[in-house]
Structure formats: C-alpha cells, structure tokens
Length: 195
Image (cartoon, rainbow, N blue to C red; front, top):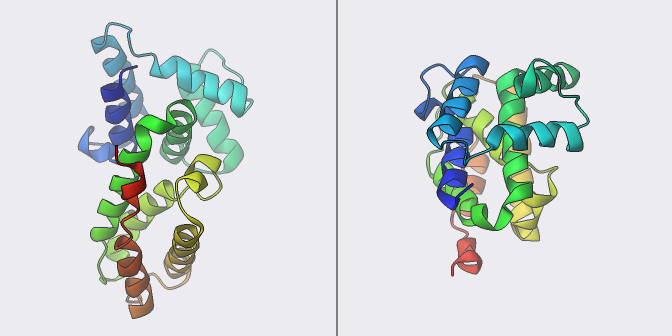
C-alpha cells in the first residue's frame, strides 16, 4: 500500500460520507473491494483487516469473510457494524503505519475542533460521534502522539461532551466546554512532527 492509499483509507474511515452516499456495511464493503480492484490487487486492505480481526481480536475468519468478522465483533461489543469498522480499521492503520499517519491524524483532529460551535448538542450529535472515533483514548498509538497536558485536555473535553450527549441532549453547550475546546485548538503541537 502506498502512502497515498493509506491517506485515502484514513480519509474514508474518518469522513465516510464524503465517499459513499449511504454509510452502511454494504456500501463500505463495496467501496473497499472496488478500491482494491481498481488498484489491480496492489492494495490489500481486506487481507489486513482480516488479519487484524483474526490475530489481534481473535475473531475467526469464516465464509462471510472480513465483513462477517466485523458483524461478529459488533455483536460481542454491542455496537453497530459501521462503528466497529471505523474503530478497528483506524486501529489497524495506526498499528501498521503509524509514522505515515500521525501528521494527517493530528491535522484532522485540529481541523475538526475548528468546526465545533456552541449550538445545541442535537445538531452536534454526529460531530460528537466523530470526536469519539478520533479520540481513541484506550489505544496506545493514540496516547503516544499527545503530551500529558494535551491528553488531560482531550479527556476533559470527551467527558463533558459525552455527559451532555447522554444526559442533556437539548442543553446548550457550556461556555466552559467551548473555552476548553478553543484553548485546546490553539496548541501548536504539530511542530514536533513537521519534517
């Protein structure tokens, strides 16, 4: 897989709706297989995701292929197929090619923060789902790209966003949360990753 292929798959995972009109398992599978076909089998994303589920998550590969592995894991984790695909494909990409994706990931993260505003969380529900996908706090690769100060800020933002989403979805976002997000978005920590 070339660096450009990795970037395309990264963007596909974090901004799926820009690549397919209806974000569901069938369209994701079609996109991935179509991309591989177009590369004349030079890109082997499906075999890598299959290995990720088999070796890291211990989900058996069967006649339903890698989509079936995702289905089985989604049932086990009580999550939907698309969420599991995105979380685990992102994990697989970073465990395989971390250096190629750090700058891209961090720039997407900061770009996303600039898109946050103080509207009600009803209109921000999908933004928060995207935030939770990007904030893989349990993943070592995620924690390794941030300083302790940055991780502390990310945890505080995540905690407040998820509390509001779960408990008070129609409440306006607090000024404190908006301040935290604005403060965090001012970190110029991409400096240490620039060549």
